[in-house]
Length: 326
Image 1 (cartoon, rainbow, N blue to C red):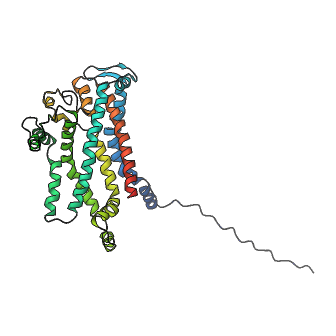
Image 2: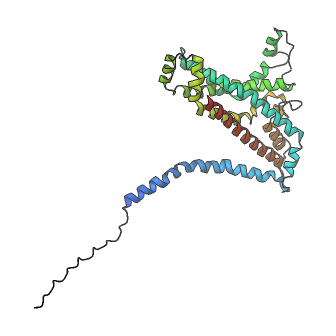
């Protein structure tokens, strides 16, 4: 007897459906999340490229040429302008004056702004009036500031010499002496920018949590201790910001020393009779717009860029370490 086995039924293979494309809404959402941030920041890089990067590169190109402001390009000369610059005594004098004015104006300015902000943070009566008042010097035209301070530091009838006479100090010719002129110009810069930086510090101080001060008070800490142990470390990012911006501004001084020189009105300013307060920007202005040597002026501009970059990086690093230790 033959036994027939039933045939084993084979399950049909599962049909594999082709992969469907993601819906259009999903694709648009993915594209939006990936590329929208770049579109948002693109205007900044576009403006920076047009007004920042391109002029910087073009200035470097001009510095490699004998380029006259009126006659134009007179030919490629390579690094000759830089070789001449490093042997130029007036350039080194302007560099010394720039660094001196930067130190004399920036360091006291930021320290005074920090103290002024701490005073305004204590809740004085009429706080809105005082906060608006400290910003007033920054609103006034720099030309008006220079004219007023030129009268203050006048040799014969200046108020400063008048006050010094009460303590037996002979009148000082503030424009003729190197350190006296540096002090006078630095005073203008400090008066104009201290209030602005103080308001930046004040805004940062008011964001510090109050419970930190309450805990320190319960532990017996005084105001001075709380200021250096809580306030200063808490506003470290703002301090770093003001250090960098003040460094850039301090090394690019032009209006204050230019207007302090009486010869500027006649387009004959060299930063004093013996270049005693001529900055790098003033020297660049002299070469480019008085002597019409655009190639050499571009060389000075590029060296100024290098100096600002180096000093800003050094200041940023030192300030960050000091604030971190605090």
